[in-house]
Image (cartoon, rainbow, N blue to C red; front, side):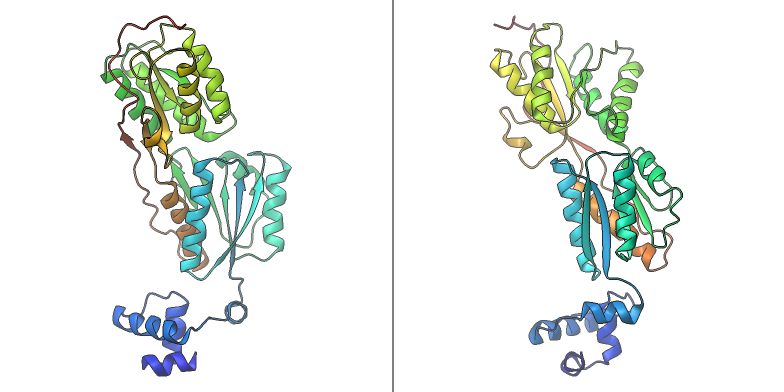
Length: 332
């Protein structure tokens, strides 16, 4: 550190401020220090920093071990944001949003001495898991539902679902069918609520919900049901994986998208535009959601009550999978 300070022409205390991400450093001084760090290939001693600050330099994350794009993108965002503040990331995955496994994961992180914890799971399940643990470190909860409590990063998925449903109604479809996700996930509840409320607001019939478990395979099964019913002309899928499966089932049975059935997905996975046809979907930047979770826990660790919780809004990305309704041909 002394060599960095000498090369940058500042004090060792100033180098420490830059390395630890403190804000009371001018941009010009920060640039000089960072340039000196690069030239000297200086690597801060994380263990020494942790001892000096009497805290760990690791943040624990508990996430659902489900191979979905949203989970992966959020974890990536958390890891990247933690790194910019000098923290490593420890991840424990659980197979259910509730139950003893979630509580055990939180206890494991606490026993490991992490500086903070982020729970990427159902808000209700997270509250239950940590309700009587009285954690000694900041805990940030993530989950859909529009919860604006401090320490909670929440998404209003109902708004995104309403966008999808309204788009299909405005194209002229009489109603919109919904392929749900897993009912024990809060995300499905928000999307189902937004879809149903938008139909009721427009005075339209609310059809029965078609089940899925968020996977393309379950979307395919729902697509088989849709293909068999010529009355169905518009579908909102709870995520893009489900939409992909439904599109494949329809194509296999000679039902055209969007000529016979329009489909809207949710999440805008990176390959959504390469579906055939390109998928109309609701976009949410889950990488930035992950960064927001990390900013919140880092701010809490520093003693701030709340970081900037602003999240990118849901937006509708219109591609080629939606069109005005036409008389459906019978599936062959």
